[in-house]
Length: 414
Ligand SMILES: Cc1cc2nc3c(=O)[nH]c(=O)nc-3n(C[C@H](O)[C@H](O)[C@H](O)COP(=O)(O)OP(=O)(O)OC[C@H]3O[C@@H](n4cnc5c(N)ncnc54)[C@H](O)[C@@H]3O)c2cc1C
Image 1: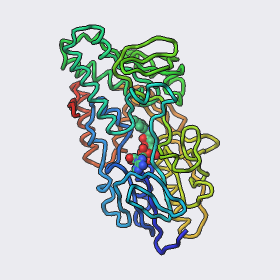
Image 2: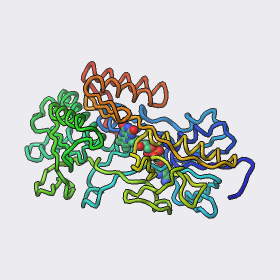
Image 3: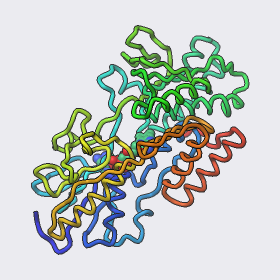
Image 4: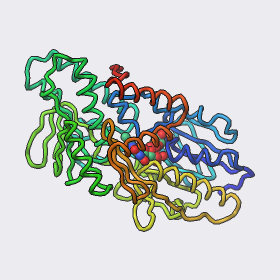
């Protein structure tokens, strides 16, 4: 490693991991370059609300340069990294070469399709802002087209929405979609027969929200069913077709909308040339460094990090806590000390199920359901959103929706 008076730290990805490393290194004796292929940071926990026309894309995204203002030793590069040359200590993005002394890889995760034929080609994924916007457009277009379709069979296919995966994203999106349809869209399309519309949630195991206690899973199931979502457990998808989904049991469900929330894997170009696990996450040591590469850290969804013998989940608090630990370890190395193992605090998990209901498991110990959990969910998500303006706009949208059963952002923007 080349020793410089001020070492250079390059961070790839301005998500919950990368951005928090940059914040932790602001004002410290290092030169930081933060790189992202987008010029904004996305608050993913509310992405499903963009797809369900509940909030505008701009309400849950924040320009990175704006966040970095005032951090004199941190600069931003808008670039998509394609490869890492570990020997030359260079990041490569076409003609752009970014040198580093310390590297933090935090490029997050992407959908995993487990080899299900047609899933990648024909299903909608809900992992990026672009995907959420195209899903919203597609759903609103199905209603427009169905409103003048004469054939009832075709109309039913257009108005059947299948969500694959009963994890937090599938559950939250199913609830929000059902409310969009039964509320604002029912009023927008008075000629539409609502009995022709169905929202299906297809889960391969016999549980929703697998990582939460049984009581919360059962509450979620009852609540979704009460809202009108048709939840099918033990429902394994065998194939996704352009206009249908074929189940392992043989049934073919005609639908023009299949939303895939069933699996995630590490998001890296060829694993960034490093050893990966089955979920394409990069193997790291307890210090979050890559074995044999002491100046390379991997954090967030991309890291196969273990704590107490268990693989850590892909959650925002894991990424932000790892970010702080990686930043501290880099500073330790700069000062000639040894990096320390990462200590994880489990803050818990929450999922919202439409208005007035949510489930929350705090610190892995205390469980809440219903209105109390919903109020907690609202508070936590508003607090974690970046930017006062975004908080105010999101709160106003939620209040409007809550009081008037209206969604203000039903624009089809190709
Ligand atoms: C729909 C959805 C809902 C979620 N809900 C919750 C929730 O309620 N609670 C919770 O705790 N967690 C939730 N998560 C998970 C949480 O968002 C992730 O755990 C967290 O974002 C991981 O942070 P990260 O920094 O590893 O990755 P990310 O936040 O995904 O950031 C990765 C960044 O890397 C950039 N990038 C990727 N490839 C490149 C490249 N080649 N070059 C340059 N830049 C690149 C991306 O643009 C992105 O900005 C949700 C995730 C999704 C998708």
